[in-house]
Length: 374
Image (cartoon, rainbow, N blue to C red; front, side, top):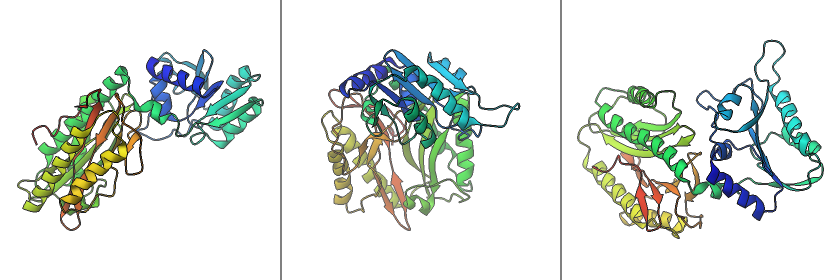
C-alpha cells in the first residue's frame, strides 16, 4: 500500500465531498496499492473488465479475478475475487466480475451522497451494476482529476522510477554497443530486449521506437528489417515498465562517423535539452518550458517538432504534466518529467534526445545518465 498516495486520495475525497470512490484506471490502482496487472501478453481472455478499487470510509477493497488475487494480496490489499478460468463451466468472466462487484457494493447499499467513479475505463455493464446497487447516490466522473494527484511522487515511487530508469540507461549503452554495419534494426532490438530482461531477472514490458537511417526523420517506429550502414543514425526511445512503474529516455547512436549535417542537428538538440533542464523549477508553467525548447530549435533555423516537448512518468509512461503549448500547469517539487526535443529532416534523418529529471525546491535533479559523456 502506498500510504502517501492514499493520504492524497483521502484529502481529495474530503475536498470534493465524496462519500466513496470507485477506481478502474490501472494507473490509479498501481499508484494506490502497488498492484500492477501484467501487460506483457495483453488482457486475459478469462477475466472480465479491468480490476476495480472501492474506497469508502476505512474500507479499501480491490475487485479482481482469482488469477490475480494473490499478486494483489501480496501488497497488503483486501480483495474480493471472482472465478476467471475454469473447466467446470463455460467461461463467464464478465458476468462473474459483475457478481463480485455487486457482492461488494451490496454492503454499502444504504450509502448516500456523492460517489466518484473513473468512468472512461469502466465497462458500461459494470456501471449498470453500480447504479442498481447504489441507488441513492450521485455519481461524479473522476476522469482527468486524479492525474495531478499522481504527478507528485513519493519517496517510494521515486525508488521504483529510478529502477526503471536504470534499465533505460542500460538500454542506451547496449544500443551504442550493438549498432554495427550489416545488422538490422531487429537484430539490435532482439539483443537489447534480452539484455534488459536478464538484468531485470524476468519479463519486462517495453515500448520502443528503434529506427535507423532516414527512417529516423519519421520521429519513430518499430524496428524492422532495415540493414544498418556506415554513418546511419539509430534512434532508440526506450520505455520499460519495471515493478509497476515506467522509465523513459531517448538517444541517437551513429554507426561509425555521422555526416556533418546529422552531427550538427545532434548538437542543437543536445543544447536545447540542456537549456530545458536548466530552466526547470517549481512554478514554471509547462507551456513556457515547451515554448523555450521550440523557440530554441526554431531560432537555429530548423523545423519545429510536432510532438510534445516532454511529459510526466510514473504508473503511466505518459502522464501530467504534459509539456505542450496549451498546458498552463505549474511544475511542482516532486514531479518526475521526461524532456525530449528533436529535429527531423526528411530524406536526411532525425535526432531526439531525452532525459528524465526530478523537480526539486531549487531546480531539478537529473535521473538519467546516458547523455553525460555525449
